[in-house]
Amino acid sequence: MVPYNLTEDRGWGLEIFEVKRCLEEARSAGLTVRAMVVINPGNPTGQVLSITNQEEIVEFCRKELVDEVYQDNVYVENKKFHSFKKVARSLGYDEMDLSIVSFHSVSMGFCGESGRRGGYMEITGFGDDVKVQIYKVACHYLPQHSWPNPYQPCHGSA
Image 1 (cartoon, one colour):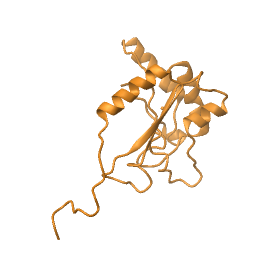
Image 2 (cartoon, one colour):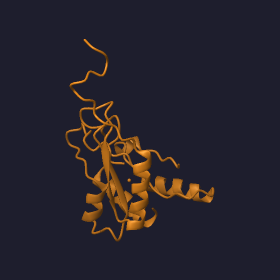
Image 3 (cartoon, helix red, strand yellow):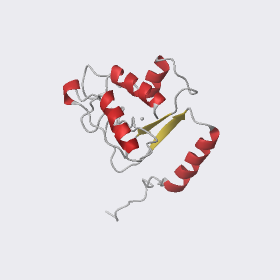
Image 4 (spheres, helix red, strand yellow):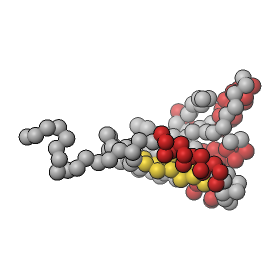
């Protein structure tokens, strides 16, 4: 993992030259960077990246190599969440130009549904061979929880 920092002076935005520098340092140290993880909106503040920042990230990832799990957690009135897929499409890129995996979680949503785990991912721009491998991993490693029966108390009798 190669960390990068957000810049307070840019409203907790991203300096793309800093991300490029981190990537170059990692590569010169012999690391193979395969993906970029972007938490947008941020947790726990709900701070969202600007469209300009997102466009820079899309361009960077298209040339070099994104978690939107908190997309419902935006608390600043004049800020709006925009998915990286939407930004990429608005720049004219389609699935052939850019691979994106976007996650969404009902466990980390607006109401903070702690204890319940659930979510989904959208995979675009990958071939069927990659999708099959992701499906295998998901089926094997993701837990298959079931909701308790509301007519059978979970914690003893009253």
